[in-house]
Length: 574
Image 1 (cartoon, rainbow, N blue to C red):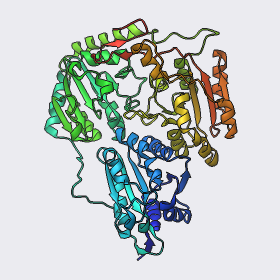
Image 2: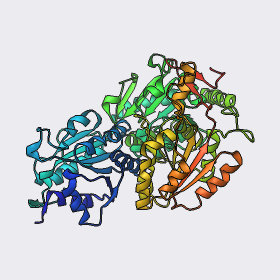
Image 3: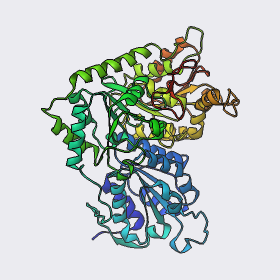
Image 4: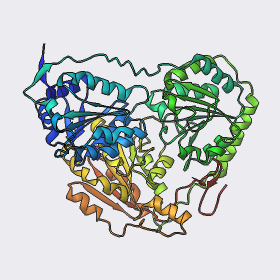
C-alpha cells in the first residue's frame, strides 16, 4: 500500500495517465500541488505568463494530438483568467482538463481571499465539473475527468481542488484506476444500423450529393475512413472551418470549405444539392446562413455523436447518433459492391461543379504589382510553399484567419488549428506554443494580426524560457481588419475604433524579448524573409509583414441569404 498526500496523488496520477506537459501559473491555493510537481521529473510544467495562455496552449496540443490538454491554475483570478480558454475549447469540442486550486474547504462561501465559485462560473462552458471533497477520491475523480474530456463529444472538464485537500500532512492510499465506470454516462459506440442503411440507400440514389463534414470527423479519428468512402462513391466533399484537412484539399473531389467565407463552388454545390451527408458537423450559423433558405432541395443525413446536436438547427431526414468512425466504416461495408443508381446524373453534377470552379478561376484576388502593398493572400500562399503544406498552422481570429484557411492547402487533419466557435483573439500564439513543445521537429506557424497578437504577446517570455521556436507571421494592416470590412460594407466606411493608431515597433519589441524580427514591406523581400525565418527550425522568428489595408475577404455570404447568396468582390455578387 502506498500512502500519498492529495498533492502527491495529483502528480502521480498525471504520470500514470501519461501526461507529459502541464501548462499553468502558480498561486497560494495551488502551491501544495506545485510543490509535488517540483519533487518529480516526469510531468513537465510550463510556466505561462497568463492563465488564458495556459488554456490555449493545452488546447493547441489537444487539437494537434487528439489527447486531452492539461492546465493548472490557482483560485480566484487564476481560475477566472482561464475562462476564455475553457469556453474556446468547449465551443470547438476540444478535450481538456483544468485543475483549479480553491480556498480551503471551511472558507468556501465566506468570500475568502481569492475565492471564486469557478464551478458556477464555468457551468455553461464545460462538459462536466468536479469538486474534491476528500483527498482519497482524487485518483478516481481525475480518471473520470480525463475519461469524460476525451470520450463521446469531447470537451473541457474543470476539477476544483480546495487547498486542504492537498495538504502534505494528510496521506491516503493511492491506486491508479485503470478503468472508470459512470452509471449516468454511456456514450454511444456505434450508430443505428437501420438508419445507416437508410442513409446509404439515399446516397446510392442521389443525383446531386454532397458530403458536408466537420471537426467531429477529425476528433473522432475518422479521416481515413471518410476518404475511403468519398473515393468509393465519387461524390464531392466540402468541410467546415473546423473540418479542414479531414479530406485532402489537393484532391479534385474536395470543394474546399463552406460557409460565410467558404469557396464559391462549395456554397453553390450545397445550395443546389439533392442530398447532404453531414458527418461530425453541427450546422453552425457561419455555415447555414439563413436556415429557412438552407439547401432547399436537399434531403439531410446527419451523423453526430451528440444526440442534442442532431436536428437542433436543421431537421435531419435521416438522423444517426454515433461515432463518425464506426458509422463511416459501416457505410463503407454497405456501399462495397453496389452501384450508384444515376451515374449519368452524377457526371452532370460534376460538370456543373467544375463550371462553378471555372467561373472563379483566376478571380480570387488581384495580385500586387511591383511597388504596391503586398496582398495578404500572397503571403499565405508563400508560407504554404516554403513549408510544403506540411506545417501546423495556428491562427488568431479575423481576416488573417480566413485568408489562412483559404490559401494554405491542408492535406492532413489536425494541422489547421483555429478558434472556430468562440472566435477568440489571442488564441493563435499560445496554441502554437503548446503544439511546438510537443512536436519540436515540425514547423509550427502562427498566422496573426497586430490586434490579436497584442492580446497574448507576453508569451514571448515563455517561449524564451523554454526554447519554443514557433514562427509568427503578422499580417499588419494597421487595423482590426474584419471589423473594418464589416464597417465598409454595412456602415458606409465609418471606421469606429477599428484603426490602431498607436502600434509598437514590433521589431524592437521582439528583440527586447531576445528574438529575431524581420520587417517586410516590399514584394521582393517576402520570399527571402520567409527563407530566413524557416532556416532554423528551433528559432522563434517574428515576421512583421505590411499588407494592403483595403483588402477584403471574399467570397462573403450575404447576411440572411441562402448559401448561394455571396459577395464575390467589392463590385460583384451572385
